[in-house]
Image (cartoon, rainbow, N blue to C red; front, side, top):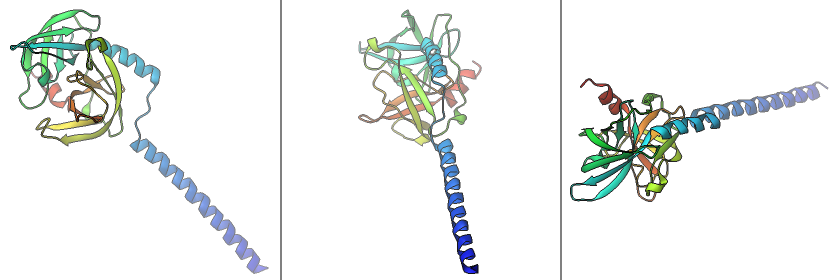
Length: 233
């Protein structure tokens, strides 16, 4: 009789330990989901953020001294019409024209190009809606982002794509001597200079380029851009 009781107790203890192990594993999985998977966002809220972001994103058309034409993207970051874009979009331009979200065309002037990182500032004469910078240090691996730009063709003006943060502080000398942000986002030509937004609709990077035939998207973080933009003349 005593042996039967002991066997029953062992069975119950084993069952209890198995249940406890299962519960712990579920909690552990939940923690991993929170840590490694993209942050949840409200679809309706992000749609409104995108509308506001598109109002501040521009297409940039350039003509070089030799007559070669090209285009890229940019984002308005001040009420008086300062636009951030990629340096390689505008550095050889003899003429720069900006298309605003309402379709209006504005001549622009280059006011700054960085000698190390791939960003530049141009300016148009307008009383503009503008976007604000986010805090780059808050970005985490797995975060969702969205990008606004004009891929491949003028008729695709202000297209929006989603992506996710794959890595921070990449050192890729082909693109820059400074640290870069890597995204999983299938950009095309014309997105260069376009803004990368966090889910709060704040600019956290500028598109630099991609590895051809892949969705490996490389971006310039806004850290140095913010420093330059806030520096006194």
